[in-house]
Image (tube, rainbow, N blue to C red; front, side):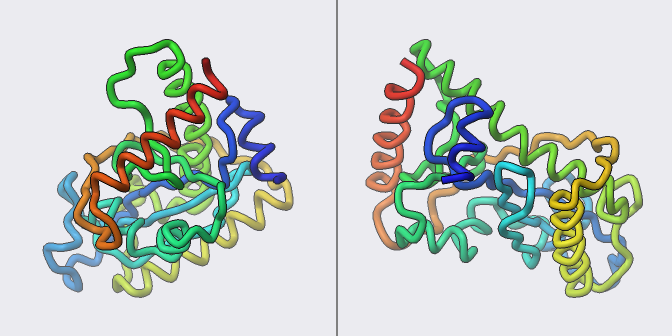
Length: 224
């Protein structure tokens, strides 16, 4: 309830339990890498998925997939994504960008809004999701080894993943303790198109239609 209220206070989106996003952590030790680590931007990286709460703390981190992995694949194969699919979070929802599939538990923006309520929802969605982008920026500023300006982590991929997780834990300690915030790092949007091939439990059309229905309910209840 505290998390729902905290997110609702940002821009009025209901029942949000977390913001999900993917970010690329550059790796410099190319001798230990294969082509799967080369991301779509052309450099070697790990594709890290994070979920943040209303205070900007990481509640879930997945740091094990090569940079070429699609965000929707990481989500579908994560504990948070699978728990959401099973209904573990009840009526709570996650917010993600267009790189994530629309589901009853994961809402993305309306692609081509035609009504004022949809425009208002998109604005509120973007304002709320801005928190995860700022949290990633602050995390990378606190630990500059994670930012591309540092040239990439110079470790084997498995050790790079461990560094990512430990620094995320230390970031949470800093946020909880009210540590002085560093200047934020500019993060580029890394939106991807929806990839519908990763959920074998139901046909994609049924899952998407249920997600549309849930999103429309929230739009009409909160933004009409």
